[in-house]
Amino acid sequence: MGYVISTANMKGGVGKTTLTVNIATCLAKNHGKRVLVLDLDTQISATLSLMSPVEFAKRRKYRRTFRHLIDQIINPEQKIKHTIRDIIQSGVCQLPGLDLLPGDIDLYDEFIVSEMLHNQAVAMGETDFETIWNRFERVLIGKILEPVREDYDFIVLDCAPGYNLLTRSALATSNYYILPAKPEPLSVVGIQLLERRIAQLKESHEHEAKMDIQMLGIVFTMSNSNILTGRYYKQVIHRVHQDFGADKICQTQIPVDVNVAKAVDSFVPVVINSPMSSGSKAFSQLTQELLQKL
Image (cartoon, rainbow, N blue to C red; front, side, top):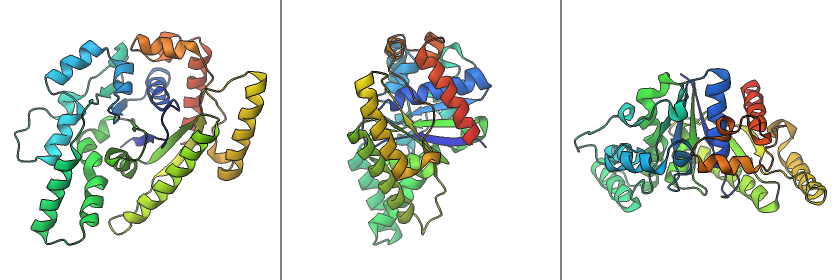
């Protein structure tokens, strides 16, 4: 059974999705790993980084997105139309070993989830609704992934910014998490908030089973070599080193590179679209560093 790794930060705009799809692609392309990317963000950025909007629209029309796997958990009595293997898109970007479980712009209805869990609590005579909720979020994504866990060396979960149900469930399911951050104060606050949330998540699930999730590393993205901003960035990075320790900070930083944005327009990760660019080389080096950490 391979590793399940979440990419998360409480703050958006830190390069989380770009990091996810390029690390996943490097694992498949450069290291021959079997990798599944799961898009948990309703912005579907990871999905559209690996397939065209036309292909996504087609899959959504035929109910072949992650949303319908969640629906089957929430409404277990409904007739199963597609299994997880039906919904996974194999060999995206024409790269064998790189698979995608497409996200959706509408993943679940919180009211329906709450209603379902309330009914469960009443049926079980459970007066502590929080216990029912914690149990559900702990098993939700794990239960969906269970049929294919042994098919992959790595399953990489691209979490939405913030701390919603799917992010909590992703963290509860994962062995490790990667924390991307821009070298600026608000992004650093996002690191601190996520660390606090994960500590609370572990505590809330203690009576169910121990959560063994560990930080794989903090990755600084969108680094700028400009002399003036570079000096300021170094001060921010030094502060993170003091707070978390050098062993938690990845040595490889992802530079600002226009080729990364251009690659998104092509629905292909930069490590395939522009393999000799500075961004692509940095992602390849970072992937090697993360493998060494593992």
